[in-house]
Image (cartoon, rainbow, N blue to C red):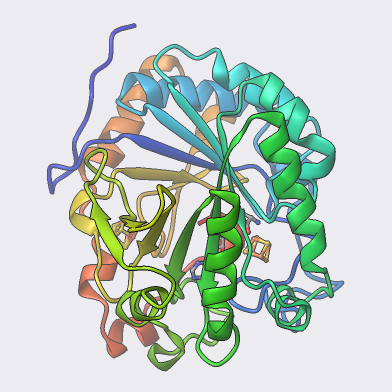
Length: 338
Ligand code: SAM
Ligand code: SF4
Ligand code: SF4
């Protein structure tokens, strides 16, 4: 396959494609889909507004020709999209894609891990914000017990998937769970990645003072064992990685608030209804679904995607101030997929 890697105005290549396959979710995490706003009458997308698997494939193929090597499937909760293993199977046949991952809250892995692995999925990032039942239930907004996620993690490991755990830390809510979760993951040999709570969307009431920074988390972890820095594996790796001195197990930090990494951001994101976003904090997206459904040719699609990426100049996290947090009208995380 002929690959023509395109770069944006800040010389960042297009490398990663994140595809949201659904905007619905079985959780109501307070930092993402607060239950007071995402209630029973919330207008989620009807099925015909979601990109079809054929449309996703057509876009993914074009993105690989422009440089994308990795695909991550996300949501909402991606395991709620019907027949997801079929999509994974088709994506895994694309020439040039060497890594397919999935981000999930883990509850449905118990049923689907095996089929996903057989379809060609390489790894899963399971979001888990607490070990303690009450704290986890407060975080997920739906009274789901952590046991449901532990079982999902075990199913993924047994199926032979690589597993990482992601924890979003919210000050005063689940920061007491940093050490217990780190100990759980260390005992299982799983990498735990701490995600700084971000000001995505308009609904979570984010405030700088709710953020627990990488530095604060790091200090809590050194009570378990000293941490040794691990070199970045590739350009654009978002997590800064460390290894416990007494084991091979790693921990990572995704410090988009206290230490932004826009200068190496190589990610394009497609929402479940087919809008392309060149930044998590973009105010609007480019309607690829309309473009496809209006009969665009392969050349037109290539031209359109190229013009969007080569004009990209986003670097929101590097520019974040009290002012931008208030002013910018941002899309919801459950819509774009994180
Ligand atoms: N439902 C799946 C899950 O939770 O893993 C996939 C979609 S979720 C939007 C993707 C990731 O975004 C999760 O790891 C979640 O914790 C993270 N996330 C959501 N809202 C966030 C926020 N305000 N700040 C930081 N991370 C957030
Ligand atoms: Fe659902 Fe994931 Fe958002 Fe939680 S973070 S509400 S699991 S989409
Ligand atoms: Fe990438 Fe935008 Fe996040 Fe910066 S703020 S790292 S450009 S998604």
